[in-house]
Length: 108
Image 1 (spheres, rainbow, N blue to C red):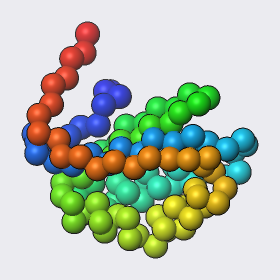
Image 2: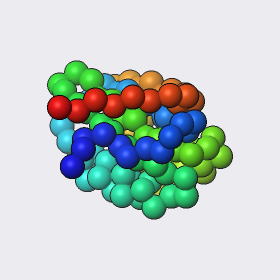
Image 3: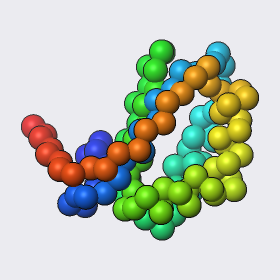
Image 4: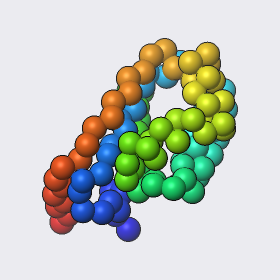
């Protein structure tokens, strides 16, 4: 099984969320799992890749359109997670949306 999201041929969109966490879990892991599960049921969701070390976390979710991204941002449960992120889980974060125009994969 590949660690890479199974995305279609471009074009599609990537939402890149980079974050610095606060100390402690405080329910973060459970909420992160719940958000991936919920996002995967959203119309237009294509996949997700995520990595975290002690200093930085990066999650990239892939979507078929800007409209799908907008609807995910407005999802009620996702809004709760966003607010908890601002008040409990993150020291800071950056969110970027980009259009994927080409892709290449290499695996040994």
